[in-house]
Length: 86
Image (cartoon, rainbow, N blue to C red; front, side):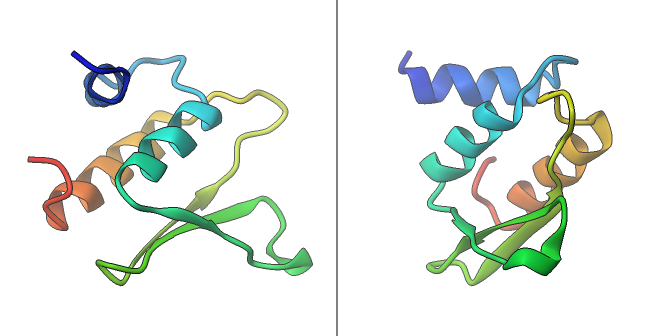
């Protein structure tokens, strides 16, 4: 099992300590790039997949790097809707 596969498996288990850096790697593996939204975006981050014409947006965690469970569920739902993960 590759590192990418292990990361997907970890993501799908929705651990309480899934970090923003892990999520960035996961989304990058699926073809999403962090979109530069400018200075007015505040703590919102966006990841765009040009091939799917899909945007994933959520609040970047702070001061901790841990992603909230509600965001993990929303991101999983969106990835499944786009058939990025089965």
